[in-house]
Image 1: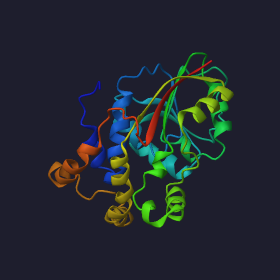
Image 2: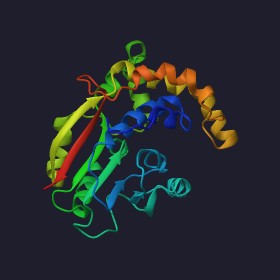
Image 3: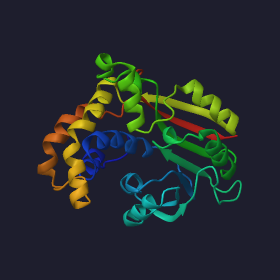
Amino acid sequence: MGSKKDFLYLQLRDLPYFRAFLRAIESEYYQDLSLPAPVYDVGCGDGHFASLTFDQKLDVGLDPWRFSMREAKKYNAYKSLVEADGARSPFPSNHFPSAISNSVLEHIPHIDDVLKETARVLKPNAPFYFCVPNTRYLSELSISKFLGKGYTEWFRRISRVSHADEPDVWEQRLEQAGFKLERWWHYFSPASMRVLEWGHYFGLPSVVARVLTGRWIISRAEWNLALTKSFVKKYASPEPTANGTFTFYIAKKK
């Protein structure tokens, strides 16, 4: 990949490890992608991902949640922050030459409306990069083997995943919205997914720290994170894998 940044450490110093090592992989992917400005980020959240991933501010971060907008201002990763639903963008048609949406679209029930609106505000041939979990995000859960579908459904709900689909489903959605799917790859192995799964439980101390201090990680020093980094590093490979539990997509507006 094209960056010399240690994204794994940068993510680990701010986030619980089960989120950090997945985000580190995704940060790597954007280093080799063309993002002509102005860039449109659909579902920018708290801005943390963009602040670490990109060396320069992105142009527009859009998100419907006011709390996320307040957090995003602190990270200062966007030239402009817009509080709006992705299905009702305030921008004119054919405005942006590129767009991203990192691990967001899976959470949106009205996904078709958001995709159509994203296509509307993009210029023709503008790239749209996004990543989402696929069906193995749920089928590879370790505890499901013992507790069955009830646990799978519970995990889906707590992670707020409305869509965990394969590329053929996303290709159909994209076509209907006005995009052409150019390329995709699976990443994040089943073993990595199970580390993420168990991280929801082993990461409870980080939740306590967040409540008490406003920070997920009390000490951001490298020595404090060295053991965690050593453990998760082997699960944080950006190399594509055929049975990966997440998928990265490159689409273009028609």
